[in-house]
Length: 359
Ligand code: SAM
Image 1 (cartoon, helix red, strand yellow):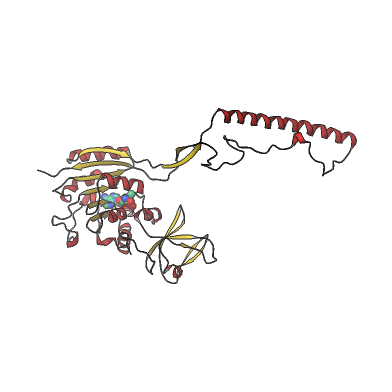
Image 2: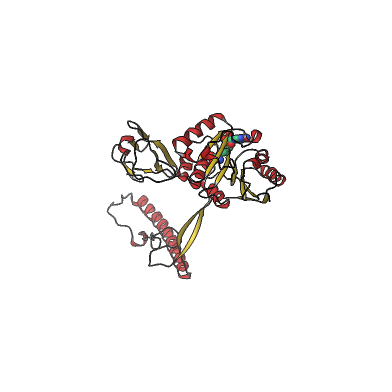
């Protein structure tokens, strides 16, 4: 199974992303005899074998449904074990299109971190392209290497344990299938490091000398951006631009068109309810004083006076009242959008630049 191609039926050893809820996706390696335990129920891996990707699965007691999803880099980003801060899809997709990463592109990435973007690069460049990724923190390097191998990304992704700021990007004994003939020869560079300005001077030895090379440096602080821009200029990079991707979810919906008659109707409705309230309080006072005078007990069957009965809530275009279904063709609607402000994302400044081959 792999992130490059889709398969239909789940087999033992496959990676399944168990979609429990929007904010809770659990990656599982399907293993006979094991069980996924959630607050909604228990899901035996044995039952998953033979099911189709995308299918719904009930818990052991017949309720508590989850979906068994095929892995994609986008879903992996939402479910991966975090070893570091990661690049989310709204940033990675923008960087990918802006740098023109496509099938066959040779990418240089540092550091690997939780390998969120590595998965996305590996899928996008495909089996014709190559990803060279570097991580200097040894436990993270070991975990990322194991993950790359178990997810089958090692056919196009090569991870190196290296401090790129001090020791550069060159790889000794590069496996032949990763060697372009001119070594690494990267077309695109992505740096998600605390000090990209220290890595930039090492790049000329590993980037393509034949075509234009694009770079993106991902930094959370403006001070880092300033130092990165200086380093890019000093090292001959051009067309330097910085952007920030601010993730927003747009919701498309219908809004009822209200006119002056609706306003008048609403004012009359409010007035009616107000009057009713005043009447009710007055009546309660009268009844109370009668009771005290004659020490009589009110009959429970006694029906309320007609003027004190509740008004049935009518159609109210401004809020509470009878519910109207969105799009109901008895009313006029217009299409509007609304943004959901609170979108969880770790955003950084993205500094882009390009380097032309020497004539
Ligand atoms: N882009 C990654 C992702 O999407 O999962 C996250 C990268 S994480 C924020 C930064 C990583 O860079 C850390 O794992 C850190 O150990 C590594 N790092 C920092 N300085 C480095 C250096 N000089 N050489 C190699 N890796 C470095």
